[in-house]
Length: 130
Length: 130
Length: 130
Length: 130
Image (cartoon, rainbow over all chains, first blue to last red):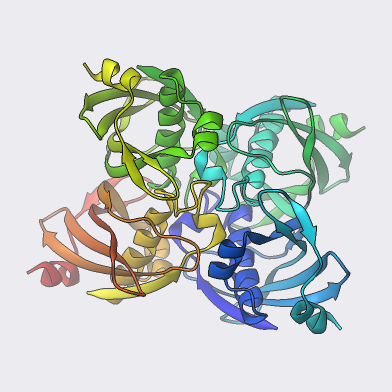
């Protein structure tokens, strides 16, 4: 499991006064990127090899709103691993007080681009899900 | 049911050469906005009344990648309606050829902001889900 | 000159209740894309040839705020053309009433990617700037 | 002067393989937010008082492309201060090697929202520009 912290910026909020539902997906991507980096897949290598982690499905539940001034703590972990796909799980909470703001799961596969062929889940990720 | 068309822009794509998983959520929001407008909830009134449609949950399945030059057709409809929440369903397809690119569902509630109180689902939306 | 219209979406606004300064740049890019398409450079061909219009400089003046419910009219034109670079000019106004919301200029060059070599400004754009 | 570092994310890049011209403005806003926080204007207070720093003009020059794997160092400082408006200056450089990627200036005013009235530049910012 990894965790990151992100301060809410103006561009994350909308006219309702709260963080936009879409902005949370950037926080999730930040955390997924750090998670994959930790497991041996830094972005520079991903780009060089043209073997990209692609999101196949996202499920996200919005529980409480985040606002300007909040710092959001995002945890990410590998939750289940198959041969060709794996699930990552995320929890977003307010650093101050610890309220859970959103929970999220993403199913991910590594694709060789631009052809789009699916690659087996790498060993370091399989080990994490075991 | 409503439908809209959106041409893929540079800022929708990422270094994998395809539309970013996050950009699809903007297309979905565009369609949801048009759907709610059709059902009597234009954005100007939403903002004036401070009664905002809030996304409670998103599920999205990415099926095929979209690329620069594609025009994406997005359909949106009300799928199920409860007393306080309703589901919208979306299909994103490539205008040329009709391939389904992604399917999405969002659970939505109307909230009075900034207090956050949940309002009953309005009648015009209940009628749509019946 | 071309013109497009864009309805302000939730994700364009911020907690100040107005359209975010960054969102205007998406409207500008939408208009620039339509302008270049009209001059013979559709995105699909740009991507296939790997000859991309790159923004070298942006100047944008924010004059009045746009809000939820506004439709923004964006005009774009080629303003000055050199051998390797050209300027596009943009005006963003509120469709209802016609207030000018922002004016913008961007200096653009065509680059061969990923090498980054600068290409001469194409003839159809030179003709436009004459 | 403050400085921050931001790792390039997938969603910052476009199909040209480089960071999108629009994404740089998010890095600039991150730095401006930290700068104003340092000078006594944390986002939580800005939102509570409804006195928002608004960008009146942006000038940005794109010098070299950033790519996946880069970490971008952004510096921000107050450059010139008038009674009602001030300029912030930004430099974005690649952490590894130090190449300057972009330089930017933004003219900013504090506005009371939603009325839009312009407030005098606060003393802590005037002191910085002296």
